[in-house]
View 1 (cartoon, rainbow, N blue to C red):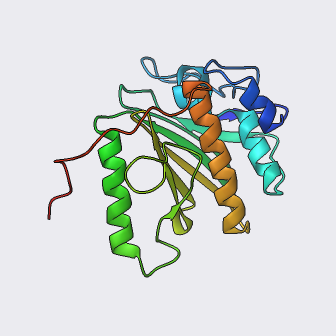
View 2 (view 1 turned 180 degrees about the horizontal axis):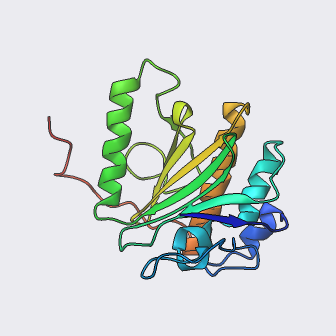
Length: 211
């Protein structure tokens, strides 16, 4: 389902200070009514209340890219486990957020990191790079978030919640994309959990990956 949105940009630090899970004036507005029984506007979707039009504009400004007058916005009806929201500007820009609260999030985060590291250790573009100060850095794997250059994707964990953040802007250096995606991860967790620090990591003893 395609939606469009426009709003004034705001400073990311101010967004952090005023963070909240509810929708704001910068929430994208629907282009047309959705099918009955499904989410009809971004305000109905947790990921779209967490990743807002103004946030995307701020991220684009951070990497030196102009924002369009309108974004194409895709979202799905929330389930108990997943919420997803995506912003696009043609083929050049894509920013998206998936909130994953399915069972065994910490274990799945660790498994994914270990599998990717084992399969792609020789390939610098596909090997996961640890990113600290986003999620729970004391969890298994050495950091609470990882960035994969070839996918333009950040994968983060804290408090039984995985975030999958995609940030693709044509022609932008990888280091800038990684830093901006990490900023978005911090903002998303702050909107979900407030200012409190991540909960302690729990033990996975006895549940190590099997051959």
